[in-house]
Amino acid sequence: MKKTFLVSAILLLGCSTGLFAQADMKELIGMVKTNLVASKKNLINYEWQETTTTFYKGEQKSVKQKRCYYSVDGKLTKVEVGGGTQEKAKGGIKGKKIENKKEEMADFMEKAMAKVHTYLPPDAAKLQQLYGGGKTTVQVLEPGKQFKLNCPDYNVKGDMLSLSLNSASQKLMMMDVSTYISKPEEKVLFNVTYNDLPDGTQYAGNTTIDAPSEQLKIVIVNSGFKKSSAN
Image (cartoon, rainbow, N blue to C red; front, side):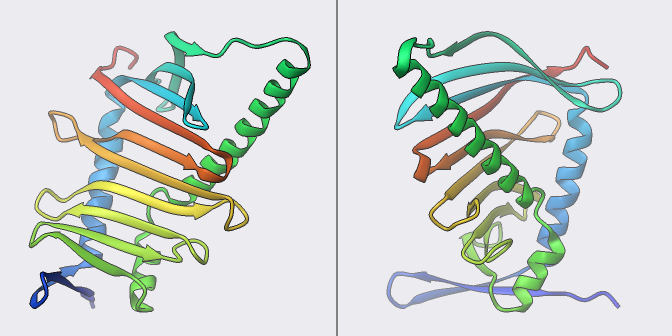
């Protein structure tokens, strides 16, 4: 028998006005999952440019651009293209220290990316389990249309996964993750804003990965989508 799970939320307006809204969380997650699966399939027909900008202590350190496309075997391929910038290497002891720091930062961000991918895609069954345990809450962004699911302790104690959903268009608008590598002080913040192509295909438009403890920040922008000539 199909079960229906209702998530209820109260949005307080002013001091005395309350708005009660209900949303079927299982249905919301299901429709977003279906849309993302369809979009991933459609993206095979496109190519685009990925621009990755790295910041350290608030200063821009490098910009890398890659042409992205799916090969005939369905594998996502990224080829670095011109137009990027990177700090020039310095010589001597200072230069060696800088290179060592770059290696440390690259290692940390690799671990951060691996951690982030444990949240992608969100597991509907896990979200339902959290809701059943009374942990998941729903914030109404726009009555009857837009909701934000807040899911604490999604992967590890103290983390938070938030999904902003549009029930009218049946699409995921934004995903936020607050987590850590191995210790709470190794915090990693992750945000993805989803955009639409003319045919309705969704893609990650802007992605930000922030590691405050390392004073590192990476911003990834996907743009220039067009039909691919690679397949």
